[in-house]
Amino acid sequence: MDRFTAPHLVGGPRELLRTPPEPVREDPARLTYRWRNGYEHYEREERTTDAGYEPTYRWIYHTAIAE
Image (cartoon, rainbow, N blue to C red; front, side, top):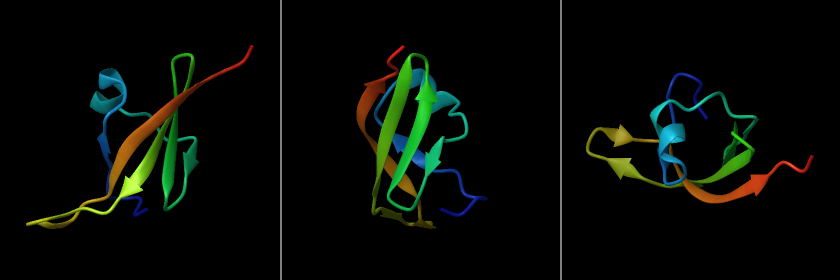
């Protein structure tokens, strides 16, 4: 992912969508964010707009931290 282009997140917790932290896992196919009591996982979608290419990631699931 281009470090100067913020990803567009679709789905998942609304608060996370407003101000996402840095991802704890970042690769071309997936992003993972630590959020509250677990992790939110996003998968890349191919999407183009009139303005060009937009990196888009759709929420796929939540995992809890086992403590």
